[in-house]
Amino acid sequence: MSIRHRAARAILGCLDAAANAMSSLRRLAVADSALVEQTAVLHPQARIVTLHRESDAIIVGAHTHIRGELLVAAHGGRIRVGNWCYVGDGSRIWSADSIEIGDRVLISHACEIHDWNAHSLDAHRRHEQFRAIVERGHPSQLPDVAAAPIRIGDDAWIGFGSAILKGVTIGPRSVVAARSLVLEDVPADVLVAGSPARVVKRLDAPEDVGHPFA
Image 1 (cartoon, rainbow, N blue to C red):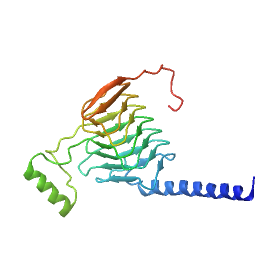
Image 2: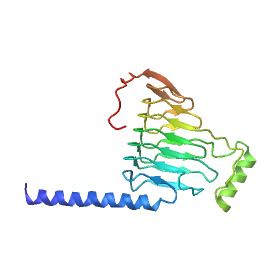
Image 3: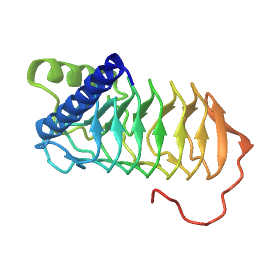
Image 4: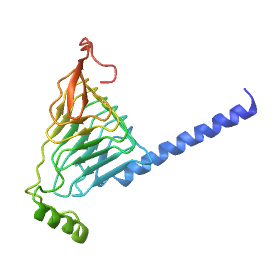
């Protein structure tokens, strides 16, 4: 191996060590608003926000990589991301109720996962809420804004640009095609696509032999 190659490998090793150190610092920075496993990686573009400041409102599992945004609303919400998951660049997971993401779930870039409507359907109340946000911050109560839990099963894959709205359960190992809008439950072991998303293909269910990363 040439001197240049050895030097290049040494530099890459230093960069990897620096990246790991920065991820550790980012975990410490959000320690008051999230529980992040030591082996999880918060990439530079990751954003963790808990508006009601409960330290266990957001939980990120072991070996999970976060590049997107996890946000819990001021009036409540919970986000649980399992082990060996991925949340891509520009994806936003916002909760005012509960979002549960299983193990080994891949969420591609530019996805939107929201378990609430964010605003009232009544125009007057919607304007009042907007004024409250810009003048005093996010309100601690939004009784007329609908919310319902989202569940994403183990080994699911959410394609880029997809949106998953309140009250939806996605079954284990299912795939949501890119740019899909998911408004209803998705069974296990299927491919869904479209707006609104519909089942377009059944996927072969794996034999129950356990999982090497369980």
